[in-house]
Image (cartoon, rainbow, N blue to C red):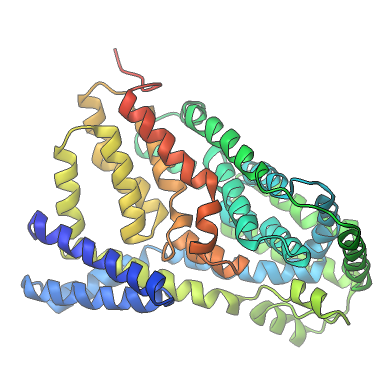
Amino acid sequence: MPSISESLLIVVMIVGIMSLSMIGFGSVPHIPIMISILLLVLFGLFKKISFKELQEGMTQGAASGMTAIFIFLFIGVLISAFMLSGTIPTLMFYGMYLTDFPFFFTAVFAITAVIGISIGSSLTTVATVGVVFISIAGSRDFSLAVTAGAIVSGAFFGDKMSPLSDTTNLASSVVGVDLFTHIRHMSWTTIPAFVLTAILFLLFPTSQSAAGAEGITVIKDQLMDTGLVHLYSLLPIVLLFIFAAKKVPALLTLITAILFSVAISYIHSSTSLSELFQILFSGYTGVSDSDQINQLLNRGGMESMMFTISLVFLALGLGGLLFTTGVIPKIFAQIKESKGTLVKAAGTAIGTNILIGEQYLSILLTGETFAHRVDAEKIERKNLSRVLEDAGTVINPLVPWGVCGVFITGVLGVEVLDYLPFAFFCLISPVITLIYSLTGWTVTKTD
């Protein structure tokens, strides 16, 4: 087991390598993570840990993300299927009417929040309506960074407050709190964060000039000319809502939606089997005479997820090494012994996201570490479950090497560091929960 000073030095070095490489030199996250892995391997060997143990730790860390990997692959295929069926083009067509609204970003935030609550999945929300809104913003020259910030804010509000969300269920179950008690208690932090976020997006109005209105009409006409815009093309979205309400597992929901979308596509197209396979793997390629429309529609495919998947494997492998070398256990033990339980829990959830880049681990490890600690201090566990979401769930999309951050960048085409300043909900939520934890306001005690 390393000393606390050695553990903190390793953490500082890893964060420094990540920050300098990505912010200073504009590197993709893969290279600094590989350098950090090499650093940890050398540190482990120096501490007399066998290379076999280090390798197994890295492998086990990567293996913990296999479920997410499969979901990412199927989401890539789903986007292609939604293009074929006309689901995304149809949503784009009707979504263009939103550009008449002077507060486009506020509308994007509100709509993604509603859809996020309805289906309980932030990543599915980003990959469906998020793709639509980012395409609309691109066609109107609206800020892609602000648009992505609104999408992420709304999607993770929905993920955080939906009884269908896996992170919401995980946060409540890991500390033994009733699901709806957990959601009600979260409203003390989440509703103020929602209101503040909506107000902040009002500060970014969008204007609609006569030339802009004419341009939107042209885009809508060109979308209609693709032959992909049909009301029945919205049925796959309805299917997602139904399956979410029935609590059908995410992977089964995605597979069913893909098959249904492909079946619908044959109503208005005659794609050969070889073309279908190519589209599902490499992504949809538009055949419009307009380069702008093709740019909007050229998305999806299993291949588009490979950048994300390779980064997830590396990040989780790094997390596995942090455990094998004893860096994380040592820091956790030190944190657990200190005072200010809820504040320390929030810091642990945030730190786990930054170090390991994994949303579920930030909830699990923090919940298990502090559950008995809050009992000893006669703090109701629902306060801890709230902190797990406020400082765990919403932080992952803000980490460039985090599972959610990498996925969102791959799907929306906007770098994490670009949209981070505008993901207001994700930034405000941990601040509010820290204020409540420090002041004791809304922190309930046991009898």
